[in-house]
Image (cartoon, rainbow, N blue to C red; front, side):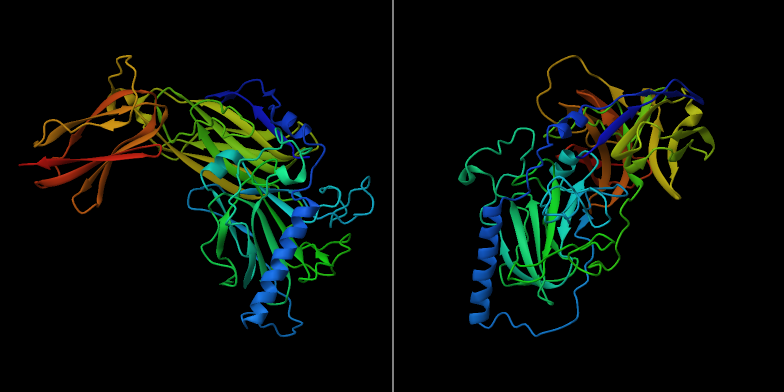
Length: 487
């Protein structure tokens, strides 16, 4: 069962107040999944195996699949990587390993002699984290080929829904009404076959059945299609197309399926580390099965509260985190030591500390968060600005339906013009000036804004006469206005 713990504490300046441990209702979500339904039904797996065998026969008949006997084993790289949309340190937690004790459903056993599996589980589950539904919505984690091989089958044509959530899924429906997963199957040079399941709708590679893919090549995006409880990659390995021998890519004392690791570099059973440091403008609000309200921000006004969250994986009782917050000059503004005491072990946990910023203008600038955990340093930066002078909020309590950036006034101008814009929902917003070639000149505003009408002045006295571009970016919205500077 996946475990997730949210702990909220409070800090003001250098004093740590009473810590309050709050178990997020996310825990109840996983309690509801104790049935631990397989990622794929027996009938669905047989259908995939039949597709692979039929495609394989056609390739052989058309001389497109030539295999020579070899004792060389394909060694695997990791099957996932962060996309450019994700800026964290790590992107997954392993929920379940291959089951090594298939004959006894009451005695769970994985490769390391632990119980991080479920009965008859035939793969390894890499679950994206933190905030998996947000990460899926942002295409944060890519599935990549672990080794060179040929595409034998895929679920690209079907494009099954990728928002399946275990809480609401009715597993008692007839088989023909069950969701299928989006998947891709690859046969490697040594004959082993890898199946990658639960991929996002419309995310699979453009390559076709019979095409070659190389180690590290993009295959799709981690999703939640098929029998799924949360966005994750189900990754399984078979010895060959005859489907008689399942392999476990991890090797340890209790691996009964193969006598060596299949990884180029096998990672440890527990990977105690920080997945991400996130900076929030308010406490995040967890949602099951849909993206959570996490209120990320990078810019804060003087005197405001910064909610700093550290998101851990494989968190053990007694592990120590040393937190340091540095001001714009690199001096320690506040620091503390946090010891995890809630439970013996959690697969995932989060600790959030609210920090009250000073009100003096001398603290304007870029601040740094540093967390030392298990021999590693993790860093994150945010900006402190004077909102009273940097930006004028002219909200007049009217209903705002659309994003908009108005034509700057005056235009033409010399040397100052006013840029007015509207934001219909809370979000991170930036106003940026570019020259006519698209070269970025300066960022005029860059912070999380509430719903409202805003204006900001741009002084272009340091630039020559000419046409310039002013761009608004907020959420997924982008709009540009032209201005003419005449000196």
